[in-house]
Length: 302
Image (cartoon, rainbow, N blue to C red):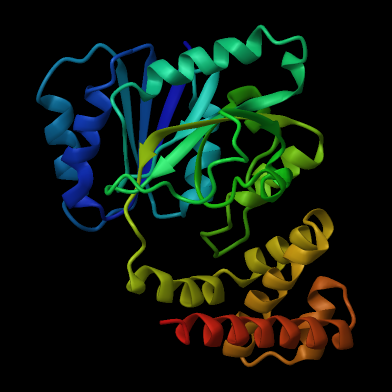
């Protein structure tokens, strides 16, 4: 099988039918769809079963319910179950353009016939918002860019993108799981793959639609990181190891903000990630000052 589409879902009852319509509308059907219901407590299960029963489909659906364990565990499980050569995560409150799978087929066929096919981790398209505005950067004027996930800033590929990875490769890079925690950023895996030299072929074509984050979801990130602090420590250490120096300031700022909310001292926070207290203090406050200055300049514009 060519492609596994995977959707982890938790309490997204009102988005289920829209997502099913999106997958059903794909112009090419050589894929399977794995849905993992991660312990939803609303009517998500009922809506999924209702949509599955509504009609026979030209693609396979595998619907699995599990005790709430978080997205990283769900991804690890789905990767092991996947029958597709490629693996594509589509979140439950997002949707695909009708020819997304068709485009992905063509893109993957191109890298498989490339002289350096063994160096490719997969392919990617752009994400856009419902108003058609592109999420993040759209390249440096080229329609196709070959680059690792760690080189995205260099090629103006910031923001969220729609990545499709080789399934066999993902099996070698599972998400790190911490006891009693259920979140870690997907970038921890993508960056480890990039650090080992694997590249993505980025296409400047939107295939994935996702809405703007609400203030509520943004604010909840502090609580989320506090509840998944071991994962945050791991993410920060990995960021310091792999990311360009200029990007590490943002990692440290977020890390300290969460640590302060947990009433941790600079000394303790520095020890956990293996840097000096002085370095952590200086970098955090420097980024904080720059952040405030940027806000002041922006708010002062007419």
